[in-house]
Image (cartoon, rainbow, N blue to C red; front, side, top):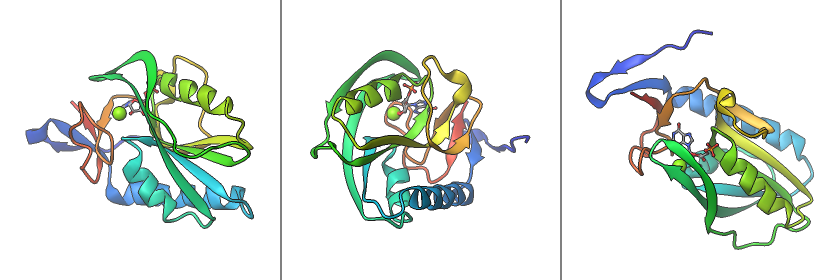
Length: 179
Ligand code: IMP
Ligand code: MG
């Protein structure tokens, strides 16, 4: 399907996904997750900082007993992944024996997520899955996939709804392609 862009010339960015589109995807994902884990408790592992808006909206629509913890990773310099990932803030809770759902804002090369999944697997969760709002599948450099995908996207550098360019523009309620 052809993407519809609205120009926002002053800011040099194009509106890609509206608040309504994002809300619809969040609701759909929450429904899928609630159905998959019915009868179980779930631990959301939110990847800071980008996923925090998404996780806040998603968590409030999931109909399961939830616990929420945060982890912060660093790998990006400007608009390109540097490839070397580190944990800058670790989880506060143990994930051993628990159903863990990683909540990501966006998967690009996959390097960050692959690193995170390796680290989390070492801690023996009962199950480990991934939910991402945006998936740039065509940009993958390592084989890693999300179990729950909001929007599959071709590429470009996106900002808004948590996504930043050098820590700016996270607060935009919609998602824009930066040009
Ligand atoms: P990856 O390691 O290349 O998959 O990048 C994953 C991380 O890079 C995400 O969790 C984001 O924080 C950031 N990132 C990737 N693509 C974008 C983008 O288009 N806009 C803003 N941040 C991005
Ligand atoms: Mg980021």
